[in-house]
Length: 342
Ligand SMILES: [Zn+2]
Image (cartoon, rainbow, N blue to C red; front, top):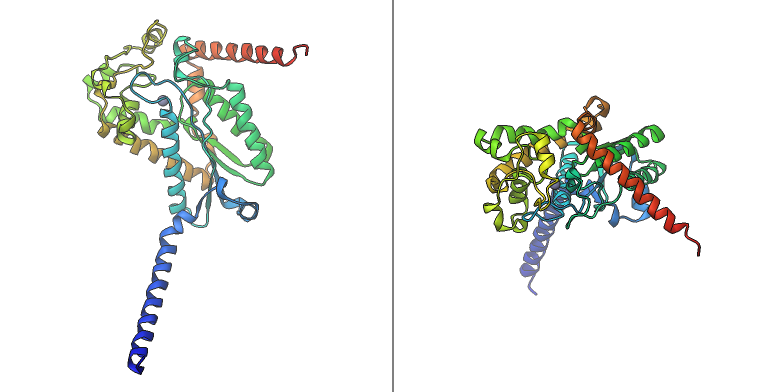
């Protein structure tokens, strides 16, 4: 090799080295935010020990199998929870430098499917645990995390049944009392839900609102959200779906009692991906905003709880009583089996 060739090669190598270093730095910068978001399932004991407890927020994403009628998948609420978890994690990483987000695997259990609205406890697509079981799962996890020094926990579980929300709220209150930290059921906070509701009010015409009625479950909102997030999972028949909607809450509750009720309340046919995007953007922003406020030190008790509001409504009170009675009845049945003479 001639001397000049060697020189050229050397220069080329140096250029290449510089280029690779620049790429590596860029890579670090690009993954800087991502590196703050870690999945607990991927970590070993040394990595978990090394997490700064004062600046680590644990996200416990829930999900559930719950019927949403003939056009939406049973895991609709789980899909929404998963997406919300990702958006909250990225927002914390971007806006809280020095913090880590520790994401847990999604727990696909929830309580009290909306098919219980009209007392229909058995429905294809709904596979729930009792509210007391759900509470125990989250209280147990609260103890595990609290005993390991974690102090910031966000529960992301998009489902609106009163005893489901209450169970998660109670687990958070237990964590606060036992460990002094914060464990917040985000969906249980009224101002977070208002992001969803306000976007609907602003985006829908009066005629659409009338047709959607008092949509308590699987209405144009959830069909729109799924058309926005997972259109591949929305059955095409939604476009011809009849509206099943009461003009009042009482009417909607009684419709859900009827034999042959399709499992939704509202008007799927007026759903659009554009409406879904509006609802999602506002809802996600409200959830992120409250997460950041709480991590910045806001006392979550200043935010009104959805479960408190629901409990005051006699229609929901009937649902709560029926679900609580069934919870006890099932527990009795299970205990009796365990105590059986062997
Ligand atoms: Zn749902």
